[in-house]
Image (cartoon, rainbow, N blue to C red; front, top):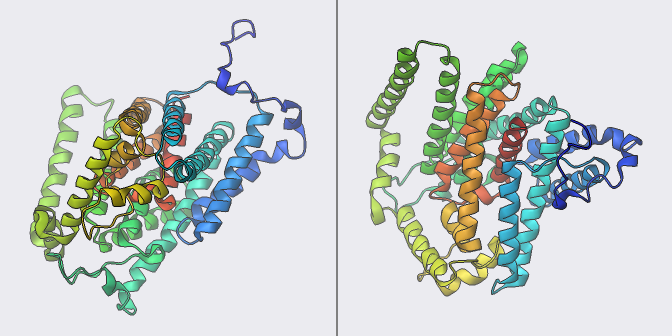
Length: 433
């Protein structure tokens, strides 16, 4: 396309490329390498690096993207990035109108820092696609270490594990592992998006050592997630791996006769449902934990969440349009005004409710639009032959798994989980280019 017919640069991006002369310099020519190393360190270190260390790596990623953007001419704003900018705009407004603006500003800064990681991933994958496999390998290395440490806890001192046994739950006595993350639900949330990515890596990578590495990540990660006894984690794992398998089957059978193309996926879903029903009815620990979902307020965990949800709904009704502002600091200051006695909480324990609490109805609508744009970008790869097809399907499956768990928990907002979500969005954005 000639320069005369090129589309105009969006005004939001006109600052990019002002230092284009530095792109050929010593630093500019090594930005891909430096960015890849920082992102690999970030993804591998998520479960074991301290929060301070993670914050430094996240900040470094944002600064690298800023430098890269100054050296490179701007491109177009793709749908996923556009909806992320919309959510950022809502967050800025919510911060300005927040009853606790200083606290909300901290949450806004965290959101911007995570967006910097997303932007760097998108830029790196766009300019050097081979780094996707390297970043995923680093992610799987951290997951494999976490899974081994979690499973090993079963053979050590169970005194610490006992603190996660709730005597008021119908599943009293269940031993739950948590690995290096100190929380079984957080371990489960960390593993959910990684499992479908590892499954796709198993199919995508060609060398046997690489495949053995990916297969070990899938197997040990699934075992560790099961032993976390996180009900939301189990549902998220079933959704993530189930959707990944279904998408792979749909892609594989796209050239089959129409009848079998429709019948085989239906038979596969039916067989999966039957296998789950048999497992739930025949494996006692699994049956007890699943039945606790139907115990209502009779289970202490259910009762706690119900009371927090009711308080969160009161907060939404009080400020439905722009919420209280982003971040857990603002939530911690406002929630006590609405909480029911003895039910302290650090979040709304539901991602949709959290979006409404922080930014009101516009925030939820933008979040739903982002989810829809992400799924559509991934599903377009079902019939495509792009090298990004399999990574895009893995990203869709991971996002579905996170959504299932996020319906009743807000573990997603922890960096150990959220960073994998940004990896998925960056993958989908690049695949949709």
